[in-house]
Image (tube, rainbow, N blue to C red; front, side, top):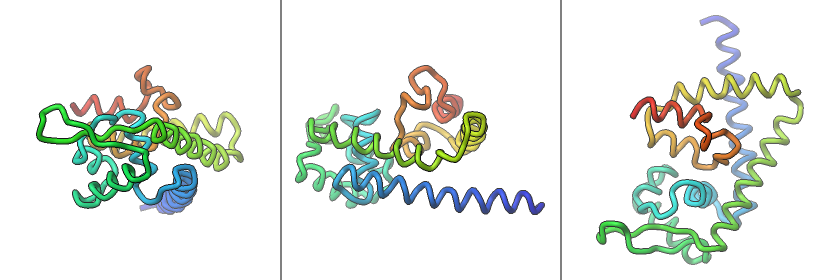
Length: 176
């Protein structure tokens, strides 16, 4: 492997950690909740509202018992509630008004943290970064489950999801 390939991989790894740390801190501060809760709130708000605990577990990468504890915490905080599921055997998870407001705060805090990270880049650099990031994301998306995990904190309006421009959505549909 060439030095430039090794350097690119190393820089991507360092950038990924820096971005993850900023997003995690911003999300936790905005939600008043830790760990998987900010991602669960945004996912439930943006695309997974009314899903089962098992689906939420897959989105935020928790064990079944961890997902139950997460929903218990969100319920105790008044951010979510369990409702009867579609098949009568399972329960669905929906956000309360407070949960929707918390999800919006998390989404906005994430956007602010990312904007701060991108501040050194001009418009051309940002466009190139968007193109490259889109290519990497499309390359690692193998279906809807991947898309849900990758986009668990996303603002679907920012990536063009609803207009069919999101590289993750496009890749997920291509795998279906």
